[in-house]
Length: 282
Ligand code: PXL
Image (cartoon, rainbow, N blue to C red; front, side, top):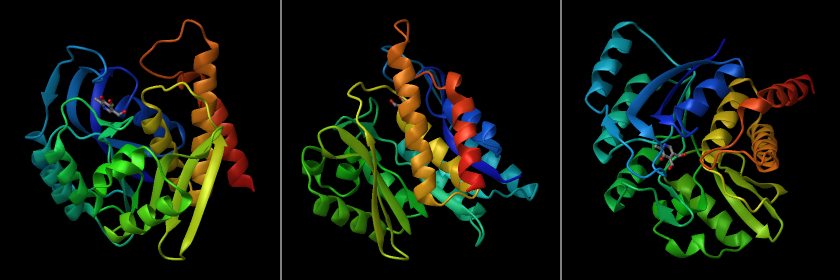
């Protein structure tokens, strides 16, 4: 069984980061080891959330893992708590990177054209450094604007702008970059990706649903990580993730009693696994 390490916060309530990555990647048949970066009472869209910073534990945990000769088939980073933490995560990646494993960086910083509460330009600057350590990166358009200092790209873009941005993201160090939430036509939205090694650009679209739900970026990233670890190509993993996220959003909208803070992903893990198995049999 492949084993990964995912580095993100625990939001006790809110369905995001580790409370999505752990169940989803485990359900997909991958051992999921975790490094919690912070413990929050809720995600940061709730007013008045608490925040316990776990920065000082990170080097001690990494030392212990090294003493036990632990290794990982992938390291997947998501929401990190502080700017200082980013340097510690870079150090951890340098210690556990080897020729056989991959590093997947979801540079979680913001959405809807804005940074998440608590993050500033310093954090965005540090995230540019972390992105340089990723083999695969997956920013949304808000994060692309911050990583490339191209604020306009969130508001409007052409296919050529997206391909240029993907080239520029790969120039930061990764071999594969994808941009999530790209919409080149009114009723479609999807992921545009670039593989620097073979020069391929591909846009994998799906239907666009106007509602916005929190945590869907984490759901998407976790499904991609699980799919890749089960041996899917990046394109197939993206298709799988889009299918699962769209299924969960539709189910959430259809349930009039749904919570405002996250999607119903729990009810559709079976659909995800059925679709995964069908891809694996092709
Ligand atoms: O979904 C990204 C995310 C993760 N963790 C926390 C968040 C957010 C987005 O707001 O607040 C704590």
